[in-house]
Image (cartoon, rainbow, N blue to C red; front, side):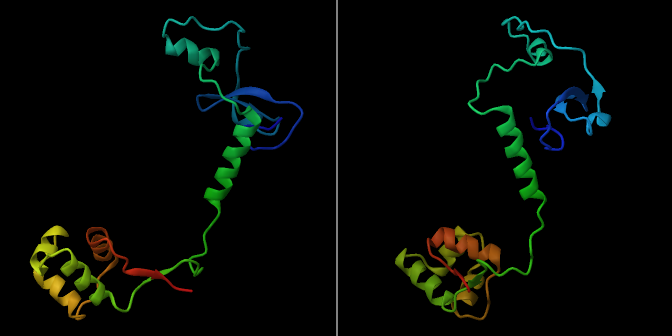
Length: 160
């Protein structure tokens, strides 16, 4: 059986109250909680009393996975979450395409919009659109996302 606190595979687990939750833990983790009273085997009345249902420990949501599988999945998820990422890793980094100004202008004219209309759609000034199309301004990531969404074009490409 797997300890619900540390994930260690042991032969005996002890139910303990740890921070308001009853967990089945190994003898090493027993120091983190308090012993609980033995559970009664009778099911609570189905009168909608949620407190009685929680106290009995009986779950009314059927599951096809065993407790061990659920615990193993949670521990794997925690391990993935705690794994530090390499910020210098270059896999899948995106960069602005060289001909962004042409793509913006072509998509805008294809939709039949002038620079002012496009500016209104993405909540920017006409001068910003003009500077982008004249290549005197390079768009930041937020502006790129707006343009890609409204014009339905790709301005970022994956570099290797």
